[in-house]
Image 1 (cartoon, rainbow, N blue to C red):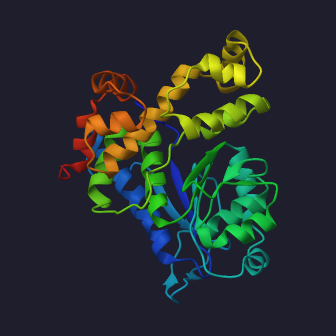
Image 2: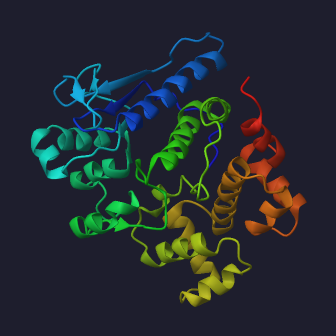
Length: 333
């Protein structure tokens, strides 16, 4: 979903620093949001001054020793934040829990007050242990799939996704998918122009072995209509196929009228608009990460008519597909 109006609620980003953290994942998050802070200020005509604070925080406010034995200074202890980043670490998780009992209550409290929580790879274990992901979809680094599934059976681990979102809880499987997550959040809080500028400035030639995931739909799955949830999952797998919603409704034991009413009541979206967003989000990922032609991308997301696809893309993003791609590919201004 394209956020044309940036949120005014971003004041502080807190990045958790603990012993055995992978410093690269911690500093990657800091660099992304610091650059966004400067770019946002420039967009508002205020020059290059930070528009929000990005703090490295540790549970006790003391420096930590990274995985590679580099001592990392921090800006302070745990406190209120609008966005919290949980970087990857290399250590026994049970040992870390015992060493840092402050973390889990902090995460629960901050999420309750509306903070966005983001975790990368092993950092997802903090979110899972907090209980906030119970009954929700999550992902993590592939090496942890077995351990994660055994330890957290109440969480819907999706091994096919590199990114998941649900109720302001975001999971990234690894470093590259974390890049996509940060760009998505920068777009959410600072607007699309800042997000594209940061992508141009910092992503360089990031090579993905996957298509960036569609973000922004997790919150629309937090309802109790299990049939509609099944249909949402089906749409994610078949969004590019040719089908009629009448057939989808009948296959799930509903009339088209009942289906339309239940789908909008559960998700807040009409089925056609939801499907269009799935297709456009996929197209955005393909435009920014591949050199495929507009016609090819149009076909791959389910539209035989590239002109119709281009018009629909503009309706959702206020840019043509070529403009969207060019703003990612051109040299940073």
